[in-house]
Image (tube, rainbow, N blue to C red):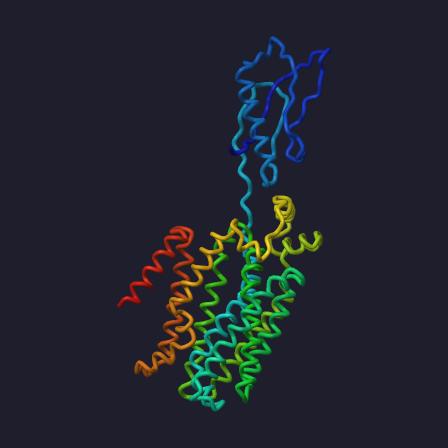
Length: 421
């Protein structure tokens, strides 16, 4: 029920023996819950008590709904004057300001997602050239170690990213994460041996593993509610953009076999930008509030949303902190009967996605196109990356309208159809 503003106009006279003060309806007093009007009306100004009671009941219900909501209280007037109780035009709250200020900070965080995709895809076109340069052109085992060492590091990083973010904060963790990302890119670009190359890939993997945990976390915590859903899929979109960037970066390889070193070295640039950008970005208000730093949380909210929304967001954080007294679940709780079904469904979706062969396409599409006799093998891989970005953008735009389940069913059905050809 929408709370409306009622202007109460009545000429009231109080009995000398039962004179009481009426409670004034005022939006500034959040504890006001009811209206007490104990009055007698003169014969010259009689009012239909039934209509009055109905309208006062509606006004009281409106006030009750008003104060139970988390929105700022709307103004309610109680005026004593000649006339009847009249219903005024419903009050329309001022629309919240657009939170476009948040977008640059989201863009800085998405550098971590771009690096995730870039380090995944950079080995695609460069593998053959770096293998020749390092003298392992015929050793497919060592080539496999160079490819898979990134995932080994990412596994370690993904387990530590959340705990680091809770301990040091989101922005500080981003800055710490930039160290292995930049160091890994530098070692890969300057490697003169397979061992150095693998160490560089492991470091880069640790970096992308950490970023895979904190990028969506930070974006969700700084995004205002009105655009939080739209920004929820930005992480995956920019991972695909990073893969595409890595494939496009391999186009000069045909004319310059040593270009693979530049390809790996380019990853250091967004790593440095990530560290510098997070130095200028506000910390997550939610994390600050959880740490008891309420004054700093208010400053962060003011930077992200504006001064007029500080009290509102702080109230939301307070309510969220008091909303559940249930203890947090641990790792072993995920395998309990309470969570087993949800965890199984989620894990199965990821498993089926990986078994579809997307990783093989990301890492070896250039080699596959070359073996198929396609001369522009790197360019063909870049087209695959572009199709990946296009599919992600389409899915993000249809997710809220078509539903998650329908899109999953359609995509898996399409993959089955392609495999059967």
